[in-house]
Image 1 (spheres, helix red, strand yellow):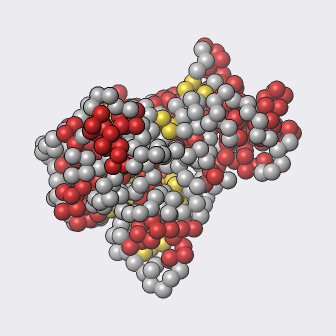
Image 2 (image 1 turned 120 degrees about the vertical axis):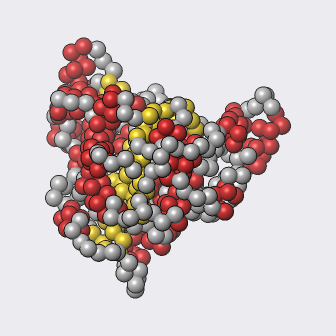
Image 3 (image 1 turned 180 degrees about the vertical axis):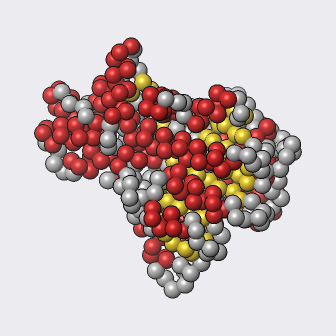
Length: 493
Ligand SMILES: [Zn+2]
């Protein structure tokens, strides 16, 4: 199943623009002036001069906690907040922060160097290096240079570093914060895993054991690491006096969706967040930590509203743990954002129908991935009805069952061509019950929210391209410039 392959979970990959080379893109844009084709217009607005000048923060941040809900459309933020208000009687942590006025906020245009719609690799590389990247590239700039990544810059400045994610650790968002991958792309996760082991990242917690274990089995490779494999071992590691690097590999591939998680085996995102913060906070010169709720993106690709909200709420609970950590301290910059919208979910029916629909969503027990795996190859009407009922309490009506079986046979049942995979069809059928519908199974070009608090947050522009986040981080932490990053700065000039 393509679902485990990468961020474009449904196998509906973004097609790279064909025909024109990168150089001729630039040439076209430069020579055609205002008569640009659309392909040229992708690159045109990103001249280096557009970027805000780096300025000095009022105070220097010792630590940076960079929180990413991957693929979070604004509807995802809203649905999770509504669930928090209904189930817990209070707003989500993120919306509470916004409500309080304690955060500096901005809108981010997430475009990649070669695409209006970004992927996670280009987005994370832009945050990490300050250079706009092409989709699928991991801190390998369009001009072929290898700009130094944020974690390696932080390490060079004497800070501890960490990555926490619910996807494979070798997935694009954590990878681009520490790895440079020349002559390749995000799919080469064995290469990425090897670099992550070689590079001095102090804490790495997530999934992806299948890419790390073959290396760890080689003589000596595991020696610098304290390796933990489940929730109990992670808990025990919190008291460990070990000076070793902490490596948590809690799943062969991605970690489970929050709705499907085995509570005794896998830690959830707040567990990993607390463990990482405790370990990193021992470091006298501060730390840089990325925390990613990576499966929010996958649930959006699957058009799975309950799965999406489950993982977004876990992200929000991780934010709660971060807020506990920074409470009373004034030395930590916290950035909360996403790398792009995905599928743009929205509750979209009025009055009682919308209320009842949202209750259906809140009562779901399992993800759509669980439904599809439960069915396996046995897509019969009774099995389908039973799996959907078990996951969501929804009783599919016969017409919906028939439509899904036809979709499974490859018939076109949706006017939108890209919604051809079974997940999209189930997601849209369930929208008849939950009233949460999706625009597509792919990332979107929407502007996204960024919120920041702590020293340096005042540097955040109100509106920015995604690589403009990077100089804010660097200035807030007062990281010294490097030869590599200076070279990188020439890229889009
Ligand atoms: Zn992403």
